[in-house]
Structure formats: structure tokens, C-alpha cells
Image (cartoon, rainbow, N blue to C red; front, side):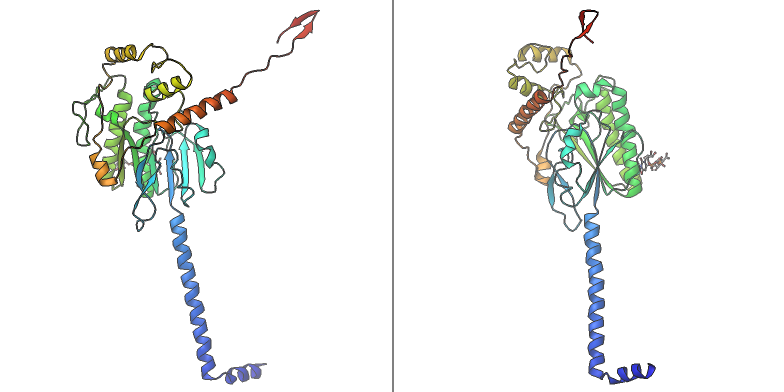
Length: 347
Ligand SMILES: O=C(O)[C@H]1O[C@H](OP(=O)(O)OP(=O)(O)OC[C@H]2O[C@@H](n3ccc(=O)[nH]c3=O)[C@H](O)[C@@H]2O)[C@H](O)[C@@H](O)[C@@H]1O
């Protein structure tokens, strides 16, 4: 046997040996390259997001996403809950919601997608997961919702934000805070640019939201300066759009719903005309900002952002919502009367 092997080897001439060696080298390079490319693909597709739900309807904010080498601004619906398309782009998206104002219907088209996960969790409690980017959109945003439980609103914006920054710090994630134009309170400067510090009543009925978001912003910058957490803050002005709640209570959705149902446009179902409504607001809402208008020049220059005309889309959306509501209303069927002692009886 041994003799046979020696005979075989000695039978190979130098040329053959060289050829075999070259083939082995090519096979080795190919296998190393394969692992490398696989790893790159894996790393890029492993980008994970966590989204905290909020009933902010669709508005378009540019998000820098994907790998650093792919650093063009892409339009991701940060507020379009969740950023539609990101799960399809190979990103793993985790949506975290306590469904205080959010609805499962807003994400139902993602349920079952291999890159999508929905966690029912309250941001006020700590959360330990692995993520690369955090979109912290938690908190009710419409005045009737945030005033419904002001302490909960404050907890969400303070303790909730602390937890998210703690998570960002632990995993080295970048965090975007959805802040608000309400940080300007009742502004004395028009239009408002981001250098303006605001004019907020700290004990007024809106304070839970205004001051909650102000301290959330402060926390973001404290974590950035002290802990090196990468943060972004977007001050979102009044928004409207698809996936907005029918009971949102803000004037645009109220008007659209009333118009679609052929009712007078009052803005508020308990009041009467627009004029009366306007007078009422003026007299009652000392805490309500008289005028708020963003200075969008910087956003336009740096991000190429321009407001999109979404009114028609919003009207179409509410029209579908009304139809859905009409088709899905639970109307209990009348029970058949049962006879007892000769008399019909209803249970
Ligand atoms: O009190 C202090 O002196 C310290 O407070 C924080 O440190 P720490 O309280 O340890 O908490 P963080 O790591 O900042 O996290 C904040 C919160 O986020 C929450 N968290 C943290 C990590 C995580 O993965 N998930 C999560 O929900 C925890 O509830 C935690 O309490 C600061 O980060 C420190 O710089 C500061 O020195």
C-alpha cells in the first residue's frame, strides 16, 4: 500500500504539482472572499430599529439610514408608523407600543413580515433589547389625549426618555426624539426657529406635554454631552395624515370628519360655528398659543425638506375610516323572546 502511494507521488511531475498548488490557492481565496461578502451582507441586513408608537400621522422627515457609506438622505416615514419600507429594505424593525393611543390596525400590514416584530410594552418600564437606531416617538400628542392623564404624559416623556437614552447608551444606538412645536409654548417670536427658547407656562394645562418634551430634549443633550450618545431632535409642528385616530380631536381631523359626514364645521362637536369656536378658543385658552409657525429655512437648506400637501390624502384616509367603522360596528342581534309561564321574556 505504502509503496503504491510513493509510486503515485513520484509519478507526479513538477508541472502537475504546480497546477495542484495553484488550484488549492484559488479555492482558498474563493472561500475567504465568500465568507467576507457574506459577512458584509449580514452586517448590512442586521441593522435594527426600535420604534415607539405615537399617533403622529404620516409626515415626512428625512432619515439618514443604512450604512455610513450609503449616507444619502432617504425619505423614511419616521412618523408614518412604522417607517414603511424599512422592513422591506432588509432592516429589522421592532415596534414597541403600549397601545394607549396607538392601534394594532396601524401596523397590521407588517404583522407576519420576517423583519418585523411588535412588542406590547410601556416605555416607562426599562427595556433590554439589541438595536442600532431608536425612534423615540412615544407619548400621546393631541391635547385631549395628553391632558387625559397628565401624570402619565409626564412619565412617558421623562422616565420613558431616560429609559430610551439608557438603552441607546448601553447598545451604542443613535436616538431620534420626536419633540414638538409646543416646546415654544405661546411664542413671542414669529416664525419660530430652533434658536428660540420658547415661552411656556410651567403650570398650565398643556404643561405636562410642553415641559415633558422640554425636559426630554434636555435629557437627550445631557446624554450626548456626558455619555457620548448620538441624538437627533425633531420639533414636529401640527400634523395630520393617514393612520390618525378618528378621535384625535385636533381641528383638521375634526373638520374633515364633519365635512365627510355632512355636519356643520365646528371643529369641536360641542360648539357651534367656526366663528363661535374661534371666539371661544380666544377667550378660554389663555394657555393656548395664539400663533405658531415654523421657520423651515434651515430644514430646507440642510435636509432639502419641504412641506408636502397631504390634505387630499388625509380626506381619503378618513373617508375609508368612516366606511370601515360603518362596516365593522358591532350591533348586537336582538335575542329571540323566550316563553315563561305563558309570557314572552327577554334575557
Ligand atoms: O445617577 C447617576 O449618577 C448616573 O445616571 C445614569 O446612569 P444609570 O442610572 O446607571 O442609568 P443609564 O445607564 O443612563 O440608563 C438609564 C435607564 O435606562 C434604562 N435602561 C438602560 C439600559 C437598557 O438597555 N435599557 C433600559 O431600559 C434603565 O432603567 C436605566 O435606569 C447616567 O448614565 C450616569 O452618567 C450617571 O452617573
